[in-house]
Length: 115
Length: 113
Image: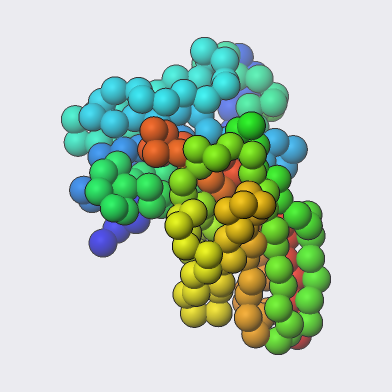
């Protein structure tokens, strides 16, 4: 069974640009969540999607947005990039139901560098 | 109340030693406590998880001890190996917040040969 797949793995953007990151969840998983990981702030929850609807949102500015498609694949977008947005962006998926509904599996992440 | 506090920040043990990583929480609504292992350049990988109705859970060399009254839980790694050198994160989630994990700050473990 394939794991959570994220693309691209590495990217460099300039301040003020925008970026879109993609995530394919584990087959059968309907919940997709996104996290930002930085050395200073650690792992922080961005948002979670289930059946194409955002169910949870973390404390990030509106420049961070996401969406989920009918096949459960998800994208997140960051507009007007700032230097502080440089981070590892992690996508995670879960069944979102049943006794194992809380088991969350992470992808390898997309490394974003803003210059 | 949403925080999970993890200690120590870093840990060095000899091969065969038993590193212990501790986490504490405040919110009694948390009902699921996973531990993740992360190697450099990789995403976090689920190691083991526990729910508050269980005081201990073992999977291979990894053991979680859970103290509900103290609102603390810990990870023990038996017979640690150099390949266990990684960053370990504890986390917590609530039943109403599927998909959202609150993470501790992480512990960097080095196991010396």
